Image (cartoon, rainbow, N blue to C red):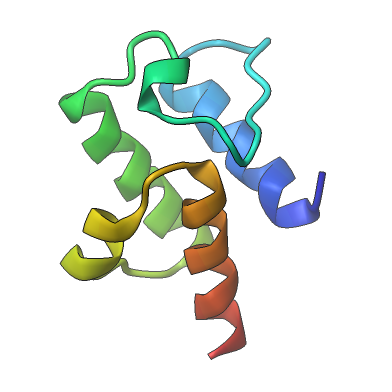
Length: 79
């Protein structure tokens, strides 16, 4: 796991209150117990706060899995 993915995994564990949760790039909201619209908002806010970034609505709509989310985070660091 990359350091970005490690940090993202910590956020997932906090938001979903599950210390055993291990994310993978292929995972989707259907893969995580309790990942509903409200927890998604909390997740995105926590990610934006932790990484000091902001996602556009277009980026959020395009993200289909955790791999897409990671790609967008990494892209923001490189821009």
